[in-house]
Length: 158
Image (tube, rainbow, N blue to C red; front, side, top):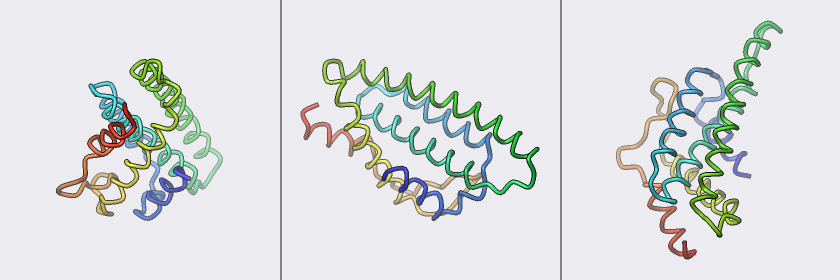
């Protein structure tokens, strides 16, 4: 269900018509960097969810491209596979970092990620539809997903 919401988010903003591998890699790299800079569990979860949100969007954009020849497809596919291989390796490492941060509660990672993704999707839905350089522009006072995730973690006793 969350993947479908991310695809809808990208479709509603007209982002599925433009798969730009350089932009996708920059956005994924930015989210990875923010994850590794995070100092709290809530911040790590928010950035991991952001990374997943961008990755779902990358896959949807790639899949929705209209290609005019098999040569285009071959070039696009090679670049796409490199990006996905890298992103999946980074995601696995992020998950290991989260498991380490959770310690004996590491079995909760799946549920916590669903909560974090839900929060990130809700926050992203408030961004609107204005674009600059292929990205959606944040609103002036966006909600803080880290604070919202922290509230959820506090309620759950983390």
